[in-house]
Image (cartoon, rainbow, N blue to C red):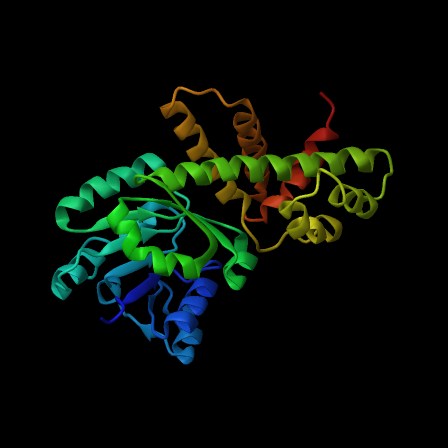
Length: 298
């Protein structure tokens, strides 16, 4: 029995390295990207390039797009995924895998919409950043029906090293919301520690070395250390996306009737960073806003 065809839509900072790994492991992959020039490297490596989302519609279709509105934008119309799946009529129900960090409520609603149309949805947000995407060491947080998840599991195991099925559609996004609370809080705490140490003349590099060797050590510190020391916050996971994710955290908390003071606080920290004009910088750049406002007089 032949393995099902796989496609990936969205060749941004995460999508492109994931696509390269899948192409190498699976031997074949169809890709689509809104900016077609980004497909040239993968085409040279042997990937099939689809001119439209409809042409990329495969039994297993992965989307690595920023938000659910971007996923919805590639579904409808004559060039959309739904039209492509209808024309293909492969027999098996296609599975749409949403890798982006999106609203757990809205992705469940999307599954309810697509189910009667013959399409299953699996939410599978990722953690580990670009480095994890390149090495295959991502954590993949999975929500969906047992049958749909079983079909895509061999692909998900190639996307990440730690893959867990957590429950129905939306469960993966709830887990990612939990992840983002920890990431945002850790980035904020380390940035604030650097503001405090700087006020007393404690060398930043020595402080980060000491934190790394103790209980305060973390993957966040390991990956972001050089950014704090050099002040280079270009590229990377943006503060505006971190703020977006934290809004999903508060949405999920409200849905469960919870008051989460840490999440609420770091949402305010990142809102200030974005309001200060640092939204496109790496989210470790929140230290700039914390420094700016810590030194202001009341």
